[in-house]
Amino acid sequence: MNIATVESWIEAPLKRYVDEVHAHLALLLHPSGQVLAQAGFTREVDVMSACALAAAVYATAGELGRHVEGRAFGGLHYAGPQKQLFLAPVATSRGTFVCLTVFDDASSLGLVRLYFAELCRDLADAAPPLAARTAAPSFMNFEADLNRNLAALFGRDEVM
Amino acid sequence: MTPPLRPIVDGLTRQRGVRASLVVSEHDGLVIESSLRFGQDGDRVAALAASMYRKARLSAAAACLGAVAFLQLDADRGRICAVGGRNDLVIVVVAEPGANVGLIRVELFKALEMLA
Image (tube, each protein chain N blue to C red):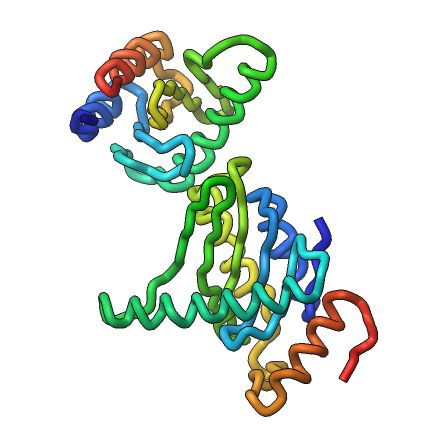
């Protein structure tokens, strides 16, 4: 499966996770919708759409959780007839990210949750220290940042 | 209607040499009921044992061997035994190396009948 990351420290933990859970697709994104890594996608437009939708679902589920039990839900699982998705936050020293995993009957929710916990630990360990932290995405530069990240993921020259 | 699962797993864990017993969803790999001795990670065992059982069932079907009756995995420091029924449920036992597998097998099939 093709894996591409904007920052190199994400690649090894994400590859291990995707391999262990036999994921069809995986995305790591900032809660704003900025993509950080993808696995299994072949088209930029699909990554953009998936990031936007995942960020929206994460924000919605978080707010719903705060209404229902006073805090955001930890993870979200949806089981379709053939494919399932798992959406959950990953906390690192670089901030909280969101991971979207799409899997089918070759895996199970139990396995995804098990290896997702390991992914969280691996990413927390691999994340560069706070001193080297890059600026969080700002809405002023959102489109430019998005284009830069997509260009990095799909190995093309950036189009402004 | 599914019978109460707690007495089933408690009965299995009372067997000599049994460290943990779990009723697991084969499809989801999630624990439905468990009885664990200290030091066992139920979620981890459930996810991996359900995956193993499912792959064994699919392998048996691919080789035209019929249904999987009893699955046993021997490791250096213990063994995992599992049986599954017609529903999605799998009963998993984690046992010490010296445990009586014959007795565990009998008890697992009894437990499976209670689940049917």
